[in-house]
Length: 174
Image (cartoon, rainbow, N blue to C red; front, side):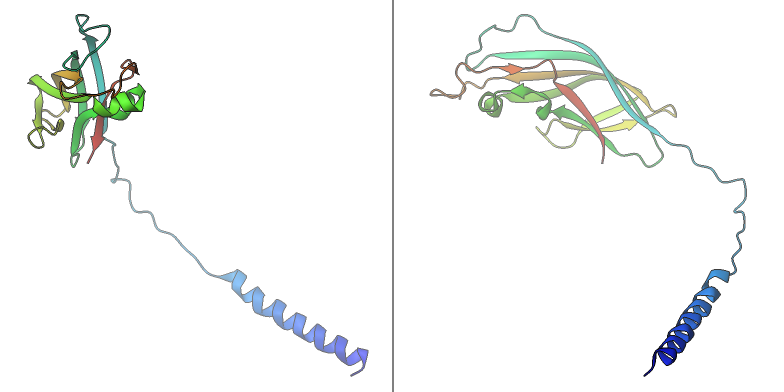
């Protein structure tokens, strides 16, 4: 095949590809408004705690010792289909893993206004949150107790420390 024939075939192929692609650039389209009456409003899931650690706890713990944190907790739970829980986040306590592995953490709920906090099961320390008002506001007295069980024996966790300053209540949607 001579070069003129090759050039003619290549030109014809290029024109065919160009014309075939040109048709795909001219697709028709249209849109329609869905109206102005639809809207959404987000709910809210927040928590704030104002409390104190008891100062009568020991400076150097031994098995059987404990310390408590008591707080008034304000919860906002707004949402038509919002299902949420309140618990203590054990991962918020930092430092020595060996000591943290033997510390018991328990949460109890006292007076509640504006809704209910119901334990999900005996001894779970996880509470289902239900607001009774349209504002979704709940106030509750919450106590966190951290203890070194009397059953800890041997050299387990001796001379270790853990920072309790970052202990956090966890509020999460379920």
